[in-house]
Image: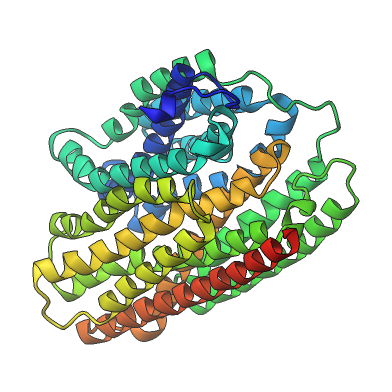
Length: 473
């Protein structure tokens, strides 16, 4: 296989060791996908088992998301001080041990605390996963390996709901966390063997003030999005308060990064228009995906009347489309401009969302699946070339930071998308299926508009790319 074949002048690790590093990174990515999707399915069962309300059970999910989001930028920066292997293996160990703690939890407080630790461990690995792949694979294979990474995540997304439902039908919810333990041990063994020990270590001081401001900004944004997604005047006041905290912390963070000797996030990376536009394109596209992934279950179950299991099956064509498109898109991005490939993918993704927004009142099963499949094809064609564009337009010493930015764009895009659906349902949906259907369709149309914005940003970078090529000539 060409991914593991050495050529003269190749950077990174020898072919066989690349395979082990790829397996470690993708195993952790699979664990994080499983942990999110399957745990969400188990929330009603957890609520009954711990004798808590459904609203309290939601914090089993929110605690993980909140802690992971707050730590992403911090771990991306720490990688330049103590190296990829230390961060990745430490994060894996924390994630695996806290998974055991989740499985042994007998109260909500303990479970939420363990989920916070899980989120921190996940942030440590996910913030630098793409950067590790860049460090161990030669540049000529970067698009292909990022495509395979997207393929791995899409496959996990496809089977997670079905696997979670199967486990819950035969075993207790604790087993959803217990399955992480053997996977974590395997990934740690591989990571300790092949991931470079200290590829970019530095003795410069760590930006603790920037880390605190970053955590405050990102955490407040998540809390504001969560509050906006719930109805009620008190929730609106909470959302506004957290929003103001996020803005103030964000302003202070930017000021700090401009004046720090060794900033947490080098703002010079964003001087590259291709990097900045790829990051903005990623943010807008994940807003669209976040809206759709939250809105469609309401459409399938509340409006069309399908069961939760059938709704999970209706989602399957989406990751299937990613599975089919992502490896080929990554391969094409190694041969042709990645921005062109990702723009084409975004356009196809937008067409798929437009088709979903125009679903009839009583669609056929295959009709829903076909429209979702078009979305998956488009997103699979977009994601890995766009990730390649981001990473290849940051220097190798900044690859850890660039990987963190990539993870932040994905996380906050999805959070903002979820908040949009929550606000739409709160404002337009009452105790009527017709009104709820209207709110869900409106959410899908907002997703179409967000994708249109992503396409416009992506097209603007094509013009900039042509200008750069003309200057080089």
